[in-house]
Structures are given as C-alpha cells and as structure tokens.
Length: 281
Image (cartoon, rainbow, N blue to C red):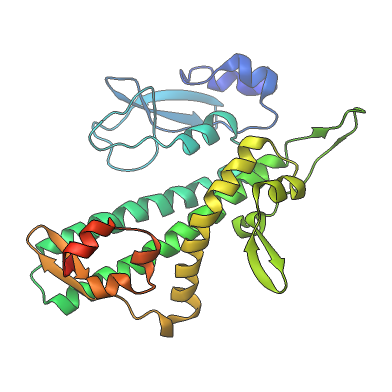
C-alpha cells in the first residue's frame, strides 16, 4: 500500500504499518470503536482534511464490533477468532462484505437460545410453550445451515488470492464453490453422498488442514441440512415436538425421543437418561 494513503491512519494504535506497507495487497482498514483498557475511543475520518482523529467514545458499549486487546466486559463480550482473522488478515472487499451477515446469524443464534430459556418465566399452557420453542428451533436450524454457507463464501473468496505453484514453477488459481454442500457432497447413482477426505483432496487441491475441516464437518452439516430442508421444503413432515414444563427446565416424552427426529439424530441426551425416565428433562 502506498505510504501516502496510509498517512491518515498512522494514529490508529491497532494497525501494524510495516505489514500494511509491505503486504496489504488491497486490504481495507476498519474504523471501529477501540477500547484501550480504560476508555473507549472512536476513530473518525475527516474527508475534508483527509485525517483520522480519535475522539472519546461512549462510556458503555451495548452491541456491535469493537477492537481491543482483551474484552471490555468479560461477562458479556465474546471473542470470535474468525472475525478477528478477517479484520487482521483478510480485510478484502469480497470477504468483509460477508462479515456482517455472519455476525447477524451468530447473534440471532445466541438470541434464540436465550429466548428458549426465558420461556420458563412465561406463564402459558404447555401447548403454547411447544409452539414457541418449535418455532425457535426451526429458525435455529435455518441459521446453522446459513452459517456454513457464509463461511464457505469467505473461504472461497480468500482462495481467489491463493496461487498454486507446481514443481515446474507454473502457477494457477483454482476457484472453489461458494456452497458448503458442493465441497463435501457428490452424486453417485443419482444419490447424494458425502465425499471422503481423499475425495475432497482429489477434487480440490488444498492443504490438509482444510481437507480435514471439510471431512470432519460433513456428517454434522448433513444432519443440519436434513432438518433445515424438512422445515423449508417439506413443512408437512415438520410436525414439531410436544414440550413439557418442569421446575428445572423443559422436557419431552421419551416416545418422542425414540422416533427418527432431530433429538435422536443429534444425541441430545445420554441413553441412560432416556431409559430411566418417562419424560426427559
């Protein structure tokens, strides 16, 4: 990056100017709230003077992204390594454009889980509780499926910047699909099956760490996809589950559990609990 272009940003304490000067390759600089351990600071770019200034920020950060060496509130704030990686190493337009969607899905996922816990405090009939929980569980599976595809879009756009060099010194760039399913699935005799790690390696020339990631995630992804597709594409099959309210939480009938539904698929409870209780907490 041209040093003149970086000049306005030298005031920002979280930037490594040496790295940006030598290896930026078109990366964007994030102007995010910054917590220095004591106070909040907000970077503002003055377009008239083309200078960045740090102003004193809000006293309490409610929600959103911020930069800091450690959490401002360790009881409330969460650190996501993927977001840190994007802003520190992969801040290209075609990658950062997916960051807000990824954060939106993750935030909504946490919100759904918190909502389910809050239903214990609502004084309604069991049937109404079931409707609330089933609706949120449906949405939770849709979110999980969407997160996989957003991550794949990030990986695919990152991979555009990777050049593979063979033993003769020839280089090329391979494009990856932007669908997670297309990375791990294959069609065999008109049926969709999961690729093995070796098959993924043969189809996509990637480091072993990526191959292992896809192979390890494939079975769980397929379960998520199965439930999500039933919710979105075959709603007549998605009859929901009857939940019961106990003093220490929710429960379902053990007969419900033993059916081929999402609870049995995801091993939510240990078998000894299922066998010993008529209603499973």
